[in-house]
Length: 138
Image 1 (cartoon, one colour):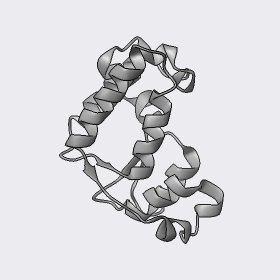
Image 2: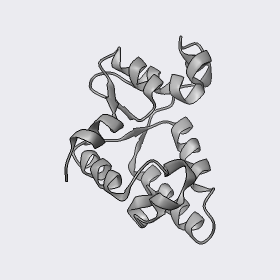
Image 3: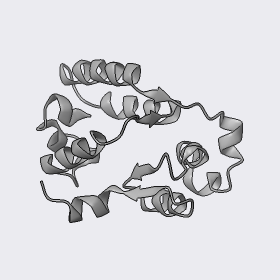
Image 4: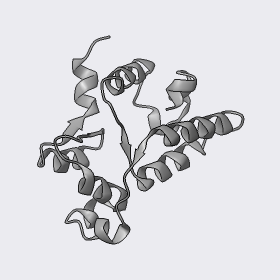
């Protein structure tokens, strides 16, 4: 998301240190091929918290951009009681458990989290972005 406003922001965020500007373009090209991007309140909260770690004026610009993405996205709500009953809740946490409640082959999960990917893969619904970044050329 930060790369949409300014690709140079990717290098500035401590949680994105393992990624380069080219990774943003790979992700962006991939997202251009799908009709809908599904989000959950949990993932949006995590996004918001990560973006809020930037300093002003970047912080406000990024959160404004997130607002626009939220308005364009299809939000899927998994109530926390359902997510907490997921078999993987204790190991992966609430956000990942909620995602595992949503994913299926027609709505795959794109992630860099290996544990989450392996669980989603069991439902034929996991896509590991790190595999894509090593196999795709722009």
